Length: 319
Image 1 (cartoon, rainbow, N blue to C red):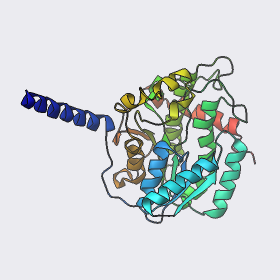
Image 2: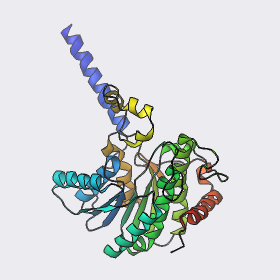
Image 3: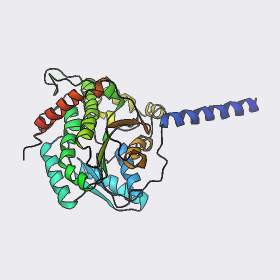
């Protein structure tokens, strides 16, 4: 009987470990360093962004984390410094829901740094109840896409000065369920929080592809990333469903089926650092591998339309 129990336990442990390996997904195992490189990560006070910041700091980068909450960002910085013993990590205020905040951040950053080697557009919101940004944009479109669209464009000269440099846009598998609503891009006529989220994640992919075309020959490359299903607080806006998922009895069980934030950061690290991707641009990755985009996501005419519309909405060319 004891032998049977022992064998059963060993088999269960083995199955669990194998399941966790599958769930955690592809890992970036190269020791590639980024010594002296200037790195900017949005929304890095928690979750995937925080793990990305820690890893890149340990690999020699000069890391800026740009967040809406300075209090939370400074706490994240203190945590990372305590864990790594490294201090070349800097906090700056950035509210992606405000075009003025983005412009002010860009002005200040460019006054500090003449070049930017790596821009990681990591911040995002998910499935929010209907709300608007300071400038009247639907929150998910405004933060996930338009905010990063404007920020990236304002920093392009610094990225070109740092070439070869890279831009990583965090998207999601949810982009495959999204559509760009030409007639109601800002969800003014109708709103569904999941539909709006999927549209914003599709916009991330299409922005990446169009950006790659426009930056061809500059030495600046762009990548879209799906981090996987990760145990973070991203779903915090999902009302009663999130509170159920976050319940003290439910959360430990669900966490067994989710990636850790460190595993969620692996594809970001892969696209940021892997030398095999030098010269590759405009692709979409998950689990440290290139993934096939849907036919809809490969619509070049729609991507160009979205770029032009985004430029108008953010007043990109208006000082």
